[in-house]
Length: 433
Picture: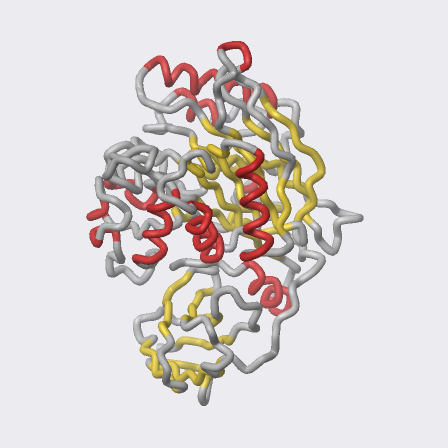
């Protein structure tokens, strides 16, 4: 299971970086008719485990049915995931009022209020379904003299292939473009959504990346092409997690890239834009639960064919987390790490309890010797991350207090050891060849 620990890097970067920087994680998820889709029972329990594992700082959702569902999600997050979380104001979709007012699929934004303040929100009406616009202000140490704002757009385009549906998607995106043309050209814009696009040549996608627009979007995954039924794009597939009926949603197995996080060009570090205030971290785009295994094509995400592919450089999502994802939605979440050129104002305090420690030197060539306090370490798992926040190893902790861990396959560099769901100061070690 791959997990970027934004909190971890607050302390690391503040101590080790030449310039003050901080990172945060954005996540988009199609909730599949939540909470009206009631099979399986207690779906929110699966969402709880997903969010505990993913730990996003910004959580964008679509297919949220009603305010009751929104309230149950924020209550669960505050209780079990992050007590600092808040939600934007729930707003009913209005774009369909003239043709039946039947749509019960809404968007919403949840966020860590210790890192962001919600400055404004607005609905963007289209020919079919609203986009929702949220302006977040980063709670940074320099916010009074140099405030940073992130414009978050959450959307859900018309589904299904075919010329008529493609035309509706294009009209929706054109309505979005008209709205975004009112923003300053240098705005930092994040678009999370179920875009229901089968290929990048579709007019709706071309409109999003049109360089004549005031806000031009880019694909942080850098996976432009014909996604549908094309295993060359397996690592960005998000639907379907299922091949069986009776649970709602699509059942065709893993074969489509429908869910996206796109950013404005202003958030892409390049030779033309070498020092942006906010930018996505190259290589951090991930589909949570997708092991980039080509054998997963047309399979349910729970299939053994969707397990690890043996490449230590790719994500590693366990059978447990893939089961949670399977049970909650027919989509997988999409995650992107974003870096700011300022530090957040406050950082959670870490416990100094001796949960685990390295025996001997922390300069390791082959074997990491680790001692754990099993009475304190109730979560019997440790994670190892690289400096990009990518999970490279998960360690199952048995009843022994001394553990000998083979790290010979890791590349040379700095790594961090931490444990899920606890604010414990991470251990650092350096892998050498």
